[in-house]
Length: 318
Image 1 (cartoon, rainbow, N blue to C red):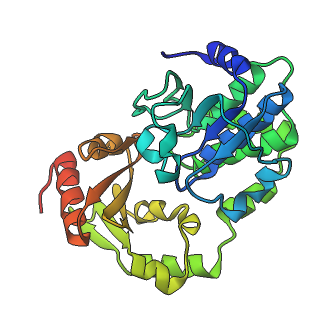
Image 2: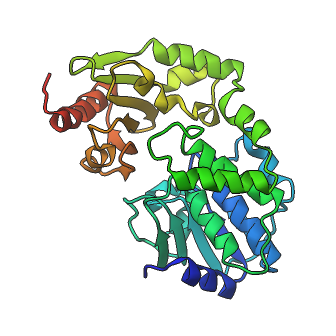
């Protein structure tokens, strides 16, 4: 059932011993949403813990300052920033079909939960979490919660540079400033600091650049061999998917990441191409300017498949 913020708060108030799920390869928005919600629920006297298929990257450690993972048998399951159960990852497969509430901002949400609050006009899921915080009279927007929410809105908008950014997004950030969030530290950690292995993988990625459709499309790829050679880990690939679209004249940026049985594809586009429609043709989804999908097979198969649907979208063939 679709719910609004008020009903969402009512449902959360009725829940106890809550597990909060993040999507695999967690980013700032899913983690910011999860930890902010955890701290909000703690103020209501609720026990909750956060679960994710993958380890939480070290750069988000400031969100865990007051977090103590409690062991209990869950009585309720809440998913944040997860449009599809396929994004749970194998370690969370046990929660498939058992999600009581999904809070999300993807228009491609599959409505897999018993109840869902989906706002596809939100630039980040943390915008919705802020509204939930205000929905509880006894909840206070603390500095720690503000740090979590600011992380979500800043990372999902590329530090307010992407086209999904709205006036409301800036207003949310402003309220987080007022609540004392450490935006200087967060912006440096999220957008400036890079490890040596991140620099090394960026160099490798740039060496793979291919241009297609009269240079309207740029494609790069990351193989397991490249990851091993540079020592990079998945957590260090945050933002790599944006690199092809940063090239002058490129309307469609495609990044392929090798998995065990194929390639995960991340797409970033301008206004001329709807990335969510392109990726939906391959069983994926997301936002208009940022979406993803998965293609089985080797690198050449993945390239040929994604370029085929991109060519249809921009009306050109190679």
